[in-house]
Length: 372
Image (cartoon, rainbow, N blue to C red; front, side):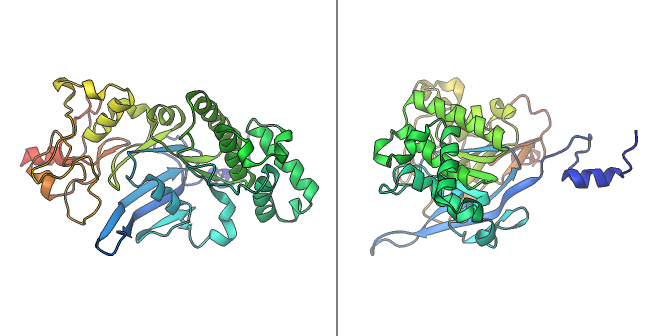
């Protein structure tokens, strides 16, 4: 039976026109993206000079409806990246686009569409406000006349509490009366009350015990599906990221060092830092032998402590050179590009431990170097 409508018209009505893969499969559109953003901060104190480079030439494309995991050690720029994506901070260079328009140009009209759950839940709320007042704030600010009445706001706040696993009786409680896991649920409910399309999660599992972490993970998975949310999850917990995420970005010293478009490529991660991070999450990296091609932290020739990030200068060398067991002279004088190893897999390394599954190597620097 004909539809009386051309093919391209049907796709326009479905909102997916121009989003078709070569094999006919519909590809999700890019909802949020960063293009070559950089961010630095001046060193504190009168004696110290220079700047700390938190993010360096970072590009990111997040598809609608996906959960993007971002992992890395403390200080690598993950939280700074989230603040820039949310529009709370502006980058020194580059741009952040939401639906192909600048995030910062849309803050006044579409602020509710990008919401953030902060790392420290106690500091993220006003300790003098009840749960009802905390949840009522976004309802009042973004709900328009629909939630002007106090009674209507209370009913809606109670609804959001039940959605995150709390009770209507908790509306009259204050932050100090909640446990860490319960208060994190309050913060998630507050973000959802704004009816966002993008939810940025900055270490939502930190400072929570294991049982509560599992509850929050299941909650985030459930809410993501129910609300068709696009989520960006920053975490140290690789297991949680693997469970929740559809794609993964690995950061070190302000740089993206590896990225996979699909989480099924997780076992193909091959950057030396990523492999060390995976081993550390298993709790056995200190027992690695020569077969794993890993080494203990060492001191470089100039006696610098190599456990520290190379974020204090603009010198051009690999950010992981001081700890990498595969480093050579080129790593000390040049920053490797973020090159595509195979479909949906990028790595910033001259000499990655190439996975056997990558049969198709696309102009990777390692291959180019060997050809010379």
